[in-house]
Image (cartoon, rainbow, N blue to C red; front, side):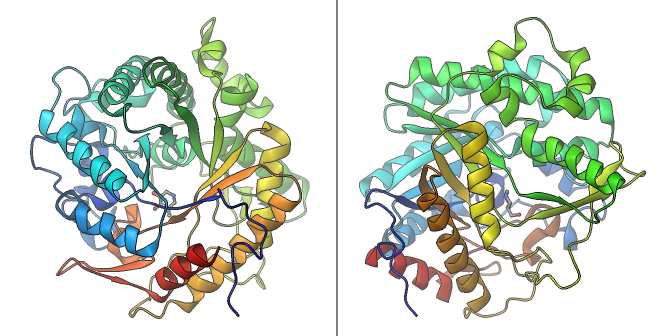
Length: 439
Ligand code: IFM
C-alpha cells in the first residue's frame, strides 16, 4: 500500500531531508590541507574497525558532492544535513585556517542552494582534530573555547547562506564510546575522563550557540542527540537502577544541562568536580529545536566491567531485530518523541532515522522500506498526540563508513559501490522520493 505524507497528517511545510557526516562520506582525508582527526588515528589501530576500513576515501563526496546534490534533487529531498569537518577547516584545530577546506563547503552549500535544497550544517560529528586531542581533547576545558572559535569561523564564512545549525552530533554516543567504553575514538575507558568530556562538550555547545547567535542573522540552532527509550533488561532492582543510570548517560547528560540548566541526579556528583561557577549558565543557552536521532529502544543491565557499572543489556528474545541486531519496534518512535516533547518543550526535528544492514547485497531493501514507513507513521502519531515535530532526515543518503562497522554496515537509501563509487538508488530511495512527492 502506498502512503502519502498528507494521509498521515503532516503539514505542507514539514521538512523532509537526508543526512550524512563528514568523516563518513567525504574521503579526501589527506587532501587539500586537511589535518588528521581522532578517527583517522583510531582507524590505524589494529582490529578496531571491521576489515581495517578507514574513512580515507569513503564515498569520495569531497569530489562527487555535485553528483550527490543532483541525486538529492532527483529524489525531491528538501534539506541536506551534513557536518563540517573541523580538521579540514582548521587542520590543527586552532590557529591557521585552511582556505581550500573552507572553499569546499562554499561549493557544497552553493550547489545545494542552486537546487533549492536547504543546507543544515552540523559543526561536529566526532572528528576532533588530533592536534587538539594531543592537548587534552574533550577532557580539557580549553577545547570548549577552541570550539567556540571554530564555530565563529564557520558562522562568518557560511552564515550568509546557512541558517540551520547543529552544534554537536550525538555528544552522548561520542563521549560514551570514546571515553567510557573505549569502542570509538579516542579509545579511552575512564570514568573521570568521561565525566570531564561530558562537561567540556556541554561548554562547547553553549559557546557555539553564542557565536552562531551573534554572527548569523536569523540563525535556527539546535544540538543533535541520540535519544532512545531506555529500558531495563530484566525487572529486578539492580537492572532498573542500571537502566536509570544508562538513561542519564545516554539520553540526559546533554539535553538536561543545555535545556533545563542542571545535570541529571545520578551524574551530578560525578561531574560536579569539573563544574566552575557560571558554567551552567554558559551551557544553558536558548536554542530553537531539539534534534533527535531515533533508531530503536535500548535495553540496559548492570555490568561491573564497565566504568559506570552499567551497559547494554539484551532485548527480549522474542523482539524482532534489524540486520545489525537493533530492536525493531516502530511505536518506540512515538514514545520517544512524546518523552522529549514533555521534558524539553521545544520544536523537535528528527535529524536521523534509518535501518542498518550487514547482509544487503542488491537494491531491493524491503526491510528498510518497512522500517522507514513504520517509523514515519509512528512519528505522525506523535505529532497528532502533541509533539511539535517539524522535520525528518533519513539516515543516510548514502551507504557510508559506519565507524567501527566499517563499510560492512549499510544504512544508505542509495547504494554505493565502494570499488567504483557508482551510486544507485535503492528501492527505499524510490519509496522515500515517492512519499515526499505525493505528500
Ligand atoms: O552512522 C551513525 C551516525 O554517525 C550517528 N548516528 C547513528 C548512525 C548509525 O549508526
